[in-house]
Amino acid sequence: MAITAVAFYTLATITIVSAFLVIAARNPVHSVLFLILTFFTTAGLFVLMGAEFLAMLLVVVYVGAVAVLFLFVVMMLDIDFAELKRGFLSYLPLGGLIGVILVAQFLLVGSAWVSPENAARSPAEFGEGGTAEALGRILYTEYVLVFQLSGMVLFTAMIGAIVLTLRQREGVKRQNVATQVGRRRTEAVVLKDVKPGEGI
Amino acid sequence: MVGYDFVPFVEWGTGVEWTLMKVGQILAIVVMLLLTLAYILLFDRKVWAAVQMRKGPNVVGPFGTLQSFADFFKFVLKEIVIPAGANKTVFLLAPLLTFTLAFAAWAVVPIAPGWVISDLNVGILYLFAISSLGVYGIIMGGWASNSKYPFLGSLRSAAQMVSYEVSIGLVIITVLLVVGSMNLGAIVDAQSGGLHTWHAFKFLNVTEPATVAVGVVLFVMFVVFFVSALAETNRPPFDLPEAESELVAGYQVEYSSTPYLLFMIGEYLNIVLMCALITLLFLGGWHLPWGAVNDPWLGFLVFYVKLWLVFFVFAMVKAIVPRFRYDQLMRIGWKIFLPTSLVAVVLVAAYVVFGRGAA
Image 1 (tube, each protein chain N blue to C red):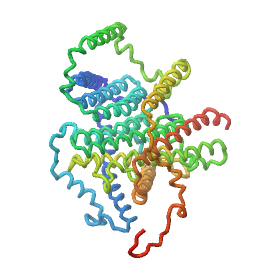
Image 2 (image 1 turned 60 degrees about the vertical axis):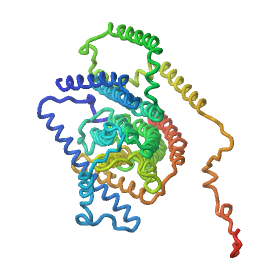
Image 3 (image 1 turned 90 degrees about the vertical axis):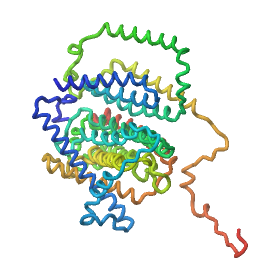
Image 4 (image 1 turned 180 degrees about the vertical axis):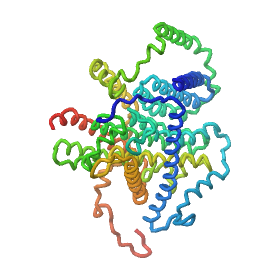
């Protein structure tokens, strides 16, 4: 168990420090990189708890897809650091309010805290196939309606994003692969008899 | 999943003996991979040369067999140049990240019956997760160089890798559905009954019509996976990030000596990983076309030969197929591969639910 303890404390420390650095770092790109590190170490904590499927999903979805696009956007923006610092005081009341709400939520969750020895379920409880199968069985039986509903919400969001970004522009030369491939030599090539000194 | 009892995610052993054994296994795999890499690089260049009727590297050592080692020393002994205004930490972190992740993926790859460092239940998902992280090395390297060409190159490359990951994920799902397990060992053992049980050639099993139907779908998925693997690893004909004849070298422009070497090792290791993955998922892993293999040494040999054969096809594609244009690349990824693999997932799922019960 010594190895798991060392692993836990290492991962937990890195998670907390990098989560702090997300808001403390001066460079926004560094912030995103620290956010990614936070996701990654959180996945490591999931692994220690035996929730391997969740850990992998966290890495695949958040680190592998969402954070990449996030990084894209932050890197492309031309960020003025002085501009970034300017609005600090005017945003302080709203930010403070959100902070208070967050702390209150954490306290509510914290009151229901169970010590790790009691909370951790051994992976063997989930039977053969591990947490992936157990999760699937629960999602597609008990919570199938909620699951389908969240799928619909995501689908709607996707359509919304496409509608927002789709612009029909006039006069754009669009490539049609079928017509390109379907071209024959007879209709594509014209032979001209060029006389010397005249040109076409 | 006969013979695959539940394995906890990580089996934490105790004692010095266990630790030493794991360290030994890791060292053995790393040494094997680096040696494989040295010769696969040479092989790549030799195949390319042979197609163009050249001789390829033939000066260092007999038939150029020591060329990769000479290159290695050249890279290591050169000076590391860090561009002015570069973000030094991220600049040096990027190649390290690519290199480390490329090796980390091999932790779950079984290379012979029972020969695997960590026999994960979600092995294939772990591989997918690690390979989806590979894009960070590229994007960080491009950004930290503080130069426009690497930055644009890295954006191009990242967009390409993110796009093709989608179809790779869906193809993997079809295989998972057929096997019913995410354990790589179990996936290989599902293909132990000879050529007609290999996922790429399941359609040869003419005795069962339902299996033939799903076999055809799986063969299409095999092709999709192969092409996506080419795009995912930035291999020609999809090497737009570093198309050396048209563009500067993409995200690697500012890199030199050892950091560049790390990038290159990471890149080629990912190619070898994709070859291994194709072997494991579709070509029966360590099983022979005419039956199962249980001996680890023979199994390793079979697996290794298959790996090299798949890489040979990679090398031939590089030599003979002209490069795609960027919009064509995106079109294939999003408009052809994604719908095809999505339909395949539905078809295979229908087979697993309805077809298998009837047969």
